[in-house]
Image (cartoon, rainbow, N blue to C red):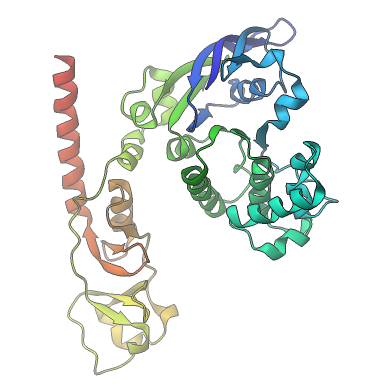
Length: 372
């Protein structure tokens, strides 16, 4: 456990960057610090490994005051991932990953063997180990940064806005990769971001910081979205917090309807008849590749001419994913796939809305009963 006990940080006797922070960070979970610029979230993170020293208060790591530990040893006992990845440009990927084990006295051969193992752990091809950081994409560099942070198998991983410098698609992939790694490794992760969506996706707990270094709310992401404690938190979370809240409501009761399909090889074949206004185009393995409107079916002969299909919904995923799939689809039908990506049917937006309303009513009754 990481415990902040009345921690304050001021610079030049001015306004606090962090103001009387008291909180417990549980082992084996992802805790996300989120808030606007200048609210003290990065300062709070860096006080954990003594990159910044608190003005007052104490920080305990497994019951031990971190101020009583040698700073260099403390830092080497934790993983650290920063926004720019911080890789050494003159060293290969393998040698970058092996940096901390080497500093800890691990023989070079053993450290490099560990580095090669971690390439696979973070989803990178082994041949990338011979390259230099400048030869990698931004997303690949961030994966190398995560691998380097994991190289000494630290129990604590500190991540300071590690995905903010990459494009949205790569960012989503890195978020999924981090969640996969956490399922396998169960590290204690403290993650800083300014993005409330990223915070609610990743965090087991979310700490919302206000300007002036005040901890405004510390709770599970669902609670922050459902019941922000004050106007600041409500405003920071945003007016669409109700939609974000759907990410925590299971979609296992969404009805999946059958849908007429046509394979790519059947396009332009006059002997193939369809009755539906929209036909789902699939490949030979049943994976969706777009929509074919009935009115233009005879004129569409290649996959490239099909209408893009919007996002996909995996059966049993959240109501938010189900609704997004239906609303983003040109047919108004959300394509539902199994775990292997094969189309198994569609969901309808109106039925998803009915489930959302039912969940809202049930939640209101539960809150009323709790209040009574």
